[in-house]
Image (cartoon, rainbow over all chains, first blue to last red; front, side, top):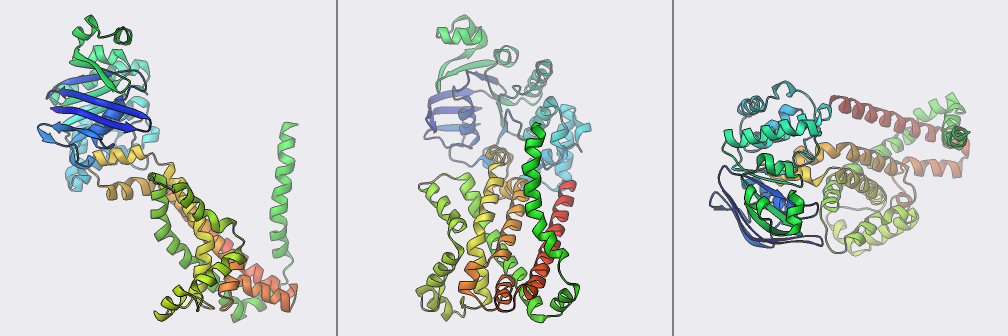
Amino acid sequence: MVRIEGVRAKAGDFVLGGIDLEVDEGEYFVMVGPTGAGKTVLLEVVAGLRRADSGRIYLNGREITFLPPEERGVGLVTQHQDLFPHMTVLKNIMYGPRAKGMGEGEARRRAYEMMELLGIRELSERKPDTLSGGERQRVALCRALAVGPQALLLDEPLSSVDPPLRRSLREELGRINRELNLTVLHVTHDREDVFSLADRVGVMMDGKLVQCGRVEEVVMHPASPEVRELLR
Amino acid sequence: MWHLVLLVPAALLILFLCVPIVGMFASSEPSALREALGDPEVLGSVGLTLYASGISTLIGLVAGVPLAYILSRKDFPLKGLLEGAIRLPIVVPHLAAGVALLVTFGRNSFLGRILGGLGLNFVSSVPGTVLAMLFVSAPFLVASAKEAFDRVPPRMEGVARTLGASPWRAFWTVSLPLAWRGILSGCLMMWARGISEFGAVVVLAYHPMVASTLLFERLEAYGLRYAQPVAVLLMAACLGTFVGVQMVAGRRHGED
């Protein structure tokens, strides 16, 4: 479970203001908001890539607010995928297990296991620059899952993928969430992600969480015309 | 017509850059070259030039890469001023740089006395040559390495961290391998700049003579005929090394 209590953070002139949020264990939570709402900043704060100015963050009851990213136990997939271009797909996926102290053989086994799960085993010796957008996203997801994160943070994971591929990737994300009972915090500006994937949805605007609840509740009873517009 | 407008000035510049070098090689008398090749003073000065510039590049690499990384990744007060100060040796006339070094590291200076007490003398010595080369050429390496680190998205390091890598591991396994080409290019520029240095070296360490100083002395004392073989040898040594490094770099790129 991810619990965020009154988290505030500054990113240049932008201020993320007092976010309170709980994502239950195994829940698929989608945070939706327009560009510049602060969704990425929130994920960076949870991942430890940006310092929270105040507030507390807990993961499965353990406070992680002041821990460095490598000790938090969260996986992150960015919209740019950020695959390491100088490594093959296999080496990219082995990177986490190796960094966590696994031996070469064990890390390789773990990487193949995860590649099987995502159906990308045949890509293992390819370099990232030879992959399609969908393949890159699957590899990035596989790499994040290979370290066995307690929560997965997804930052607009489908935004750089062609529309026809999005549906299959959405199905993939939903399947992984269910099969691994993985807590997922997915930020997006695409309402399709909300309707296809979310157990619950949060709406962010101008650095604030303006509404949160089950998808039907938020759609039926939007807190403001802006929220209605966003989910229409 | 448009292509002609581009091609004519481009071709003129290429000719201007290449003709003097090719001309110097072509007009060298084989006997004078053979004589220079057998002259211990010439060989010693070319060797010293390559060695001192190599050592200064090594020092620049060890200190300059961390500096470039900090400048690329961190924001802090007066950062712009610091970056300007680091670039200063590029724009300062090199004779003036030599004078500045002499004032700072000369035998009668505060630092010079302390370092002299430790057995490190910079006036008319190889360490002085290295110091002068380091001063005028390190900014090239720092600028090139910083540019290379700028091209590696910090996000990528962030992802490496979330995968379990320490900052140290993320640097060595992600940032450095992705920036190495720019760093190598900076090393080559620094090394080349060190080799070609004359002004700062001649003020701080006239002796032992590097190739540029020997070239100057022979030109002044004996004329062009005696200076040219030294210049040809120096250029041949530089070209050979540059081509070698580029080939290694190219092969490594192919393996990546």
